[in-house]
Image (cartoon, rainbow, N blue to C red; front, top):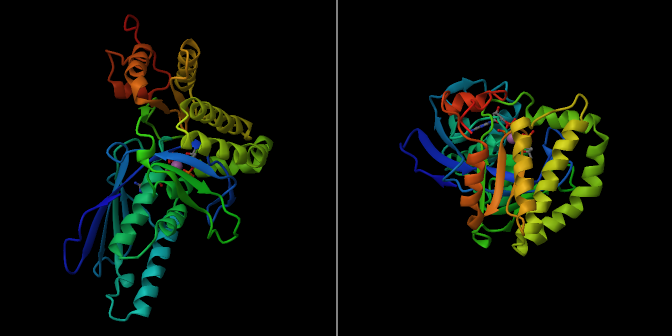
Length: 360
Ligand code: ADP
Ligand code: DP6
Ligand code: CO
């Protein structure tokens, strides 16, 4: 996370950025929707914030009469967003307690909050915008209100905004322990290994379609928990052992094992989406072609070259050692060329667009 300094002695303003994280053991299901407590533990890789990130500016002023929020330049209603209201209320309560304990402190808890946030990548398209967005929001709130929060505390605050956000508070390889407490006090992220642990591991983002998804993650996983029998099996019989195996693969920097577990977990997550009633299809035909290509490459080569994973959207994330990336990029651009007679943006926006004849 990075931040810039406050600019005025009266009004306060802080800007921070936060990175996305892409899960290799997926979170999909809540046991408590209000506190955002998950049905299973999960594990992700936090990407470099030089790449996909949210940038949030929060200003705090006695003249701000109501709390307001702008996302990617458009104003959105604060009262209509319960998660946002919860995050703001939690931060204000915390500040108020500090002000009560020390009456010398300025009463910032009574000031209005204005939030402006932008993502430098598609929002709500399955590239973890809620993760970087809410991690950035709570981190910036803690800075502007001068809340002395530890990493685990920040993680629990971010969880109130979006489950996956609790993992974007930390860099490197991060696990979210589902916890056992009813109040969520032990449901937070911890770092499995820092980013320096495995610097050869890289991520390639393949944007298949940058449009907003039809079913949000929140609604999708709620329907899955209510209707999928396979999901219940995954929570108790698959994820606990897979979390252990994934932590070992990361500790050993064992790419073959890491890749196999990552692809299997992505497959199972999309299988429980299909088992949801009515079914949810996040992957489209292009996503499936990416799966086929990675599978073919891995089968043709003596060792596993790459792992695909798909979040709740059609866009692929490819994990691979740096040494394999140039060759993989050549293969992806050969098999998924940008068409020449329409803009790339139009092509990726239309899942049914055909590559024009003669381009391949
Ligand atoms: P994604 O796959 O991108 O995480 P979700 O359905 O999980 O999609 O969440 C998308 C929602 O996350 C948005 O509709 C918005 O409410 C919230 N969100 C996205 N980016 C930000 C941001 N920068 N700041 C605050 N909230 C954000
Ligand atoms: C497929 O964290 O976006 O990306 O907690 O309802 O905001 P809410 O959902 P969200 O779900 C993420 C689902 C996922 C897998 C993952 O990131 O672990
Ligand atoms: Co999300």
